[in-house]
Length: 81
Image (cartoon, rainbow, N blue to C red):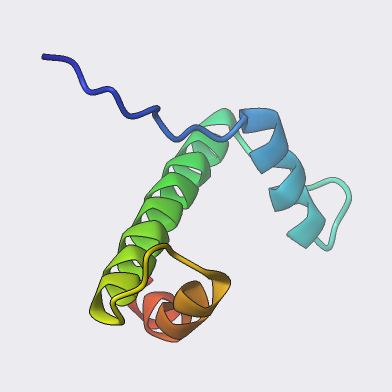
């Protein structure tokens, strides 16, 4: 049976633009492989953040995930990545 959950996807052009914001030299370019790798890393990061926030909400017996739950798991998540 196929998964019914939608797949998390970042548009490569959006990722490329975000990467170029960090470049100090305007001549610096990001290769297609680098953009694909960064898109995959962002996907993993977002999924992990959502899962940790959901677990935090469950631990607090909340009915849903709020920004407060994301804020609580964010410091450890950033350290793990």
